[in-house]
Image (cartoon, rainbow, N blue to C red; front, side, top):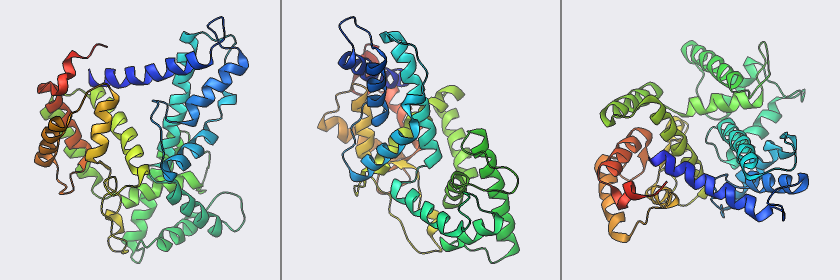
Length: 318
């Protein structure tokens, strides 16, 4: 039900975009269709407006990469066809966010500058030694054979993941920029196996099926990206900048504020006393004293919301 509400919220925004651009015949000609698709691609496809510099920078970068003019369609476009085209925009938007792996545009820009500095041939690729130099410049230790072997293993995983998602066409021993981004995400994140186990336990406890967990994860990551781009003190997990602690820097978790925004986005009216109940539950289940919530605990929170019929969630008409 919660996922359906999320999708319904996105569908409303798509329909509103269509209405803003349609002609007197209730359809979009070629030019109007491109303008409407550009509106969808220029901002978050679910209609959330970003105001922070980082949020705007992310949207500009994603919009450039989506390239709406390359989306094939036949004019005139009615509302049903436009909804299908909006699905293409959403797919491309999601792929671009996956490419960025949760990093901010400022971080992506910094990585790109470091990559370009090491890529002395300007061919857009690094070899294994050059990748090692880049990660050492970021403060990672490659002083032992074990560290170096681990890097090779992580690099192979990053290359395979990027190729599977269509992020890279590099072959052989070549490593392009987006493979490096996937590599760095893995290096900055600790305890992946433990996190996977936590999610599996939470899903079993909450009686969510695999496809439900996957859909919840999509919602969670979407709002994490928004949370991460706001740049407020509430949106950011505390971070240490020492090289010994850099691996703990990136924690994928939602703030209390973002959780409330998520619930309101699907039509729930969260009053001050409701927010107190929500905060108490978050404090009860979250491992973070700051009240941020990681995905495993997000699943537990979703189960609680549904079981408690929080803010009348079961009465929403879909």
